[in-house]
Image (spheres, rainbow, N blue to C red):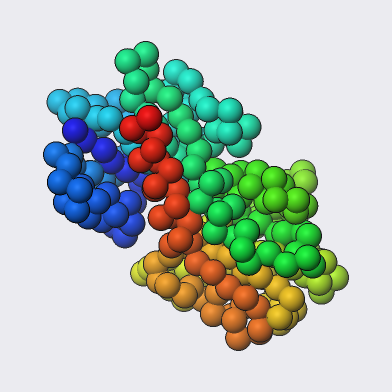
Length: 240
């Protein structure tokens, strides 16, 4: 049995180590492979000569993989992004466990004044984060370098906006090793102890985004627990 991860650059994959350790610990005759695809058109090659049972999907293919799938779960359809693919007798089915992992990880950190969130980035992960935050009762606002309808740009993050939006979630790859000196260009001097910063990046443990938040008194959490929770959910989907 083969499971795996598809993406463009997978040098620091959490999933492969997580599942390899799981298979060894539980004595399962299975392997977990990283499939680095320069372009999504190569997706069918993953199945050639392999008994693939399930796949995780990461940047930048969470939306691009959808045309290859026969069916989507209700959540994946609502979010418009897929991070888990299940192989069935009838074809490939797409799911989104990012929302499960994210909401379970951030929920214990939320306080009554956390009613509005800035979501940095506009990719597939940001869709799951917005969906999860909305389910938790928070209003969300996307932030991007590029101006578009319904999206703020970083230079629009005034002190007033920063005071109102006390949850900030980074869904971009900024800060990921080895580019540890990069971070989203938010006005960090506007942060306070009322703010909660959540970074989907988990390598390094503390990104520059989180470090600057902590130095200004904000509560912080990285994406490692989220990844663990979504991986557990993915395994349940593959074996249901």
